[in-house]
Image 1 (cartoon, one colour):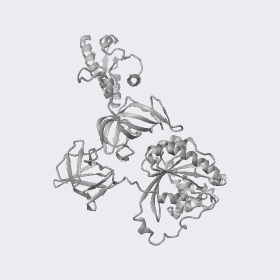
Image 2 (cartoon, rainbow, N blue to C red):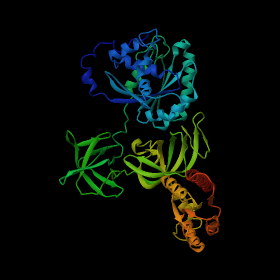
Image 3 (cartoon, one colour):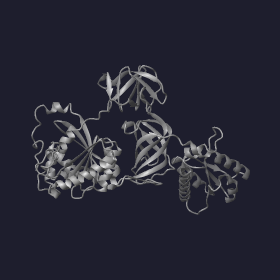
Length: 569
């Protein structure tokens, strides 16, 4: 068994604390299939770096679950997360901290089951490196490929293939070379910037902290040595300035500051900045922190800026460098990881959270889904849990963004369901897209707004619903559609003449609105001829809520059908 980096209970060597203050932090995530040994590996790293308290070690040693023939069962060192879950606490990703005299580390411990792929994406979203564990007895599994793809998708520059359980295959070089070769071919397809494969036994400690004599044919560094030597992001501080405004601080008439975290680049006193979306220019007057003013702020710094000019700025605005502005658009292409059991509803408006700005957005097109096993592109009409796809989105207001691979903080976003407030998807922006004017200009003579343009804006075409003697069902339907982002309104037509109803119907049709007509007779349907086949009538004897639910479902299917027609034009 490889010796630990520090003997348990022994102090760090003299001066290590001073070195620790200047060490760079590395965030990394572990990923892999179920039972590949992630918990054991993290436990080994925590144990050998003295990041485990004595009472925790004693608890593990005395645990009835400890079946290890060695000092302890390292996988049990992360069982606190399971205990928290048993107490009803929901934690998707567990973060663990440890350090060595050469570097500080934060590791994101993510679940391995395919059902929790979205949690792996969450843990990897802030990582500088990813360790993909592969069971040497099983080889490269589909879930390992999925995690490698997500790591690449999130722009993680350093990917390590930790081929674990080498002790169970007799430390075979042939097994290691075969698996490493398979993973390297995958890494090349994914354009991983820095790939490294290492044979390890997390249980025995081989090549985890120190190089092992059990693999004399392996000349590379141990896993921890490799992590200690990984370089920092060279573009972290020389990227374009991006400062999303989180809060405006005005304690009195003498001070007006703009608080936030500098996403990228560096700001100095006197630098010229541009305020988005207004485009107003000003200069940085002061960089204020709790400990006093700074001459310079670098990426990752949480600061308050004051400007030389009185500028109207609020939360969601952004200060950027004059020479390197971001893209500004309502339409963009993105990779999307769907993270919710409820499938994507393309007729629905979601809340898009981007930096400190929140806008309403709709997925206007699913270009293709990615098969993570083969990396092939598959045409689909919907996205379900753990699906990864390339999509186009449209927001109600412009956002200011960069491609994710250029600046991750301004190239990433999440989608939130406005009703349940659940995070349903995470996205990585690839590029702005030109608004498709080919379809919307087919019938244009001048600059008139067309029916197709209205459908693209609202996500649905005009339609009519006849709620016969069901005023409460009409109200419930309006509320349901409104909350989902539909342009819908209830029309009380109980005392309207056919002529009046016909005029209203034509107006709603032209405006692209869903009209919910509360009427007393189905004969009123004749007045809705303007809507053509898009007329839905419900005379069921079910409850008002069931009638509203049925009509809403029929309207959603109708809207989805029109989306497909748009794509086929």
